[in-house]
Image (tube, rainbow, N blue to C red; front, side, top):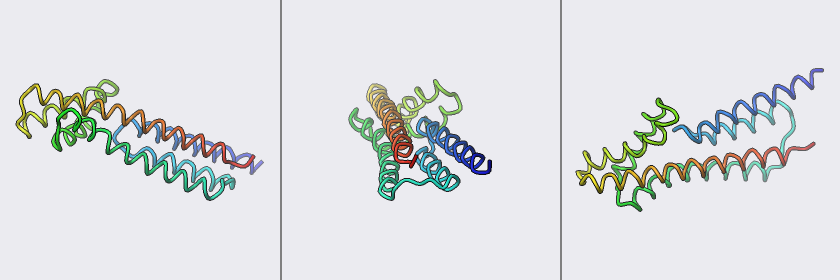
Length: 163
C-alpha cells in the first residue's frame, strides 16, 4: 500500500511540474527547469531512475531550451533589420502580454519590439514594424522549439524508466 501511494505521489509531482514546465515554454519563465525538476522529483520519490546518460541528455536538452529561448527572438529581429532595442522590447512585450493571455503573447512581442525600435532606436515606423514582425516571428519559433524540446525531455524520461 505504501509503495502504491509513493508511486502515485511521484506521478503527481512529475506531471504537475511538467505541466508548469510546458506553460513556461509559452510564458517568459524557464519551463525546462520545471520539466527537469519533474523528472528529478519523480525519480527521487519513486526510487526508479533512468541511467546516468539519460540524465546527461535531459540536462543538454534543457540547456538547448535556454539557447532556443534567447536566440530565436534575437535572430528574428536581426533578420528583419532590428537591433538590441527590438529584442529587449519583444521581451518586455512578452512579459506585459502574459497578463493578456493568449492574445497578448502573440501581439506583445510585436508591439514591444516596434515601440522599442521606434522610440529607443529612433527608426522609421516601417523599419520598426518590420523589426517587430521579426521579433514576433522569432518568439513564435522559439515557443515551438521549446515545446518540442520539453516534449522530447518528457518522452525520453518516460521511455528510459525501468518497468
